Amino acid sequence: MTVENPVRKMGLIFTVVLALAVLCSPRLLIRAQELPAEELDRLEARIKSLEEAVEKQRERLAAVEPTVQEEPAEEKLPEVFSTAAWANAGGAPGVTPKETIDNLLEFVVRADGAGLVREMEKLMSEGDKGHAALQDFLHALDKNAELGKKLAGRYDLAFALTHLAMRQEEGLARMAHSYLGATGKTTRTVLRGYLHNFLPVFLRFHAGRFPDLEQDLREEILRLLLAGDKRLRLLFEAGEALGYFPPVEIVKRRLAAATDFQEHSALIFHLGARNDKESVRILRGFIVKNMRIYGGAVSQALITLARMSDPEVERVFRELTWTKDAFIYAKAIRAYFAISRHDGFTPEARRYLNSRVSFSDKKLFINQLRRVNPGILEELRATVGQLSSQEVRDFVLK
Image (cartoon, rainbow, N blue to C red; front, side, top):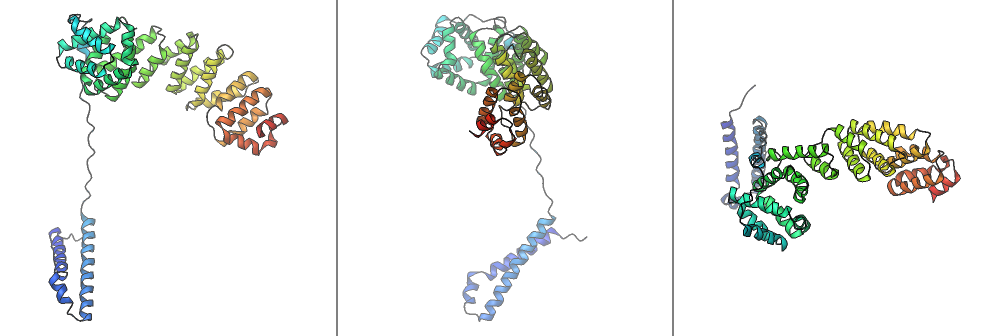
């Protein structure tokens, strides 16, 4: 194999380009007007051949030049900011002059978000002394629940504090972790509830930046679930925002012990979010055991199951829809078709409409198809002769 000298190649291209430049120079073009037509044709042909030679040489060079692949940029890990030392510092300092605290509280009373954030940023810049004042301010808010609620309830204040979190993420992480550490035995302050809502989103945005705070928040969620805390939706949403799912056995025990709809609802939604085989198994057990006890919660559990993608879901619905119990069959089939299904599910809908379930239940089902699965209803209309009951046929065609 002959390898051409790159320098020679570049020289050839330069020569060709130079020849083109000469042939196309203004002086030559002026003189060309005086040449016979045959000579002009010859020059134009020469120019064309030189252009083709340049293009071919470029293609040859491109073919032999090695392809340079860019190295993938290394993912830059976030710079870790540890907050554990401040979380373990103990209770509120309580050494800040009263006028400083009153000044901060006055900003909350007036809903002056800009003024409050300006003072909080100033205190954060003062280091330990400033952060001690911020802790005293937060504890003062805890003593006045209505004033504490204004932090999230008033748009002026909530928006301003979000701005603070964007500008002073390290200061806010330190302040929040210090407060959580100081109020660890209280657990039910107004501000802790707000932090359970806000911090998971904050930590997810700054993934890996504040590992101490994130770990303590996960442990607190688990501790509260084990202690029987009723704020299940808040705790589960906080955990899910952090990508944290507590041991499923804890969820199973809480569901078995729950007696009101709010508890059932939060636990059922959480199992749906887990979307795994064990969660399907737990929901199936709850449905079978409580079908005639907690009707609303069972309906919610069935619809949650229908929305899950784990393969075990289909087996559970086959069990529940191939039963001689008309009550169970009606509840299960309505839940199954409460989400959008394709036309391939029409035979299952037809089987239900030809079953011994009451006509009133069938009417509810047909109306549900009109809202959620109009394509299946159209298929039933097109094959209406396959429905055994005249009153069902009439209602389908209505």
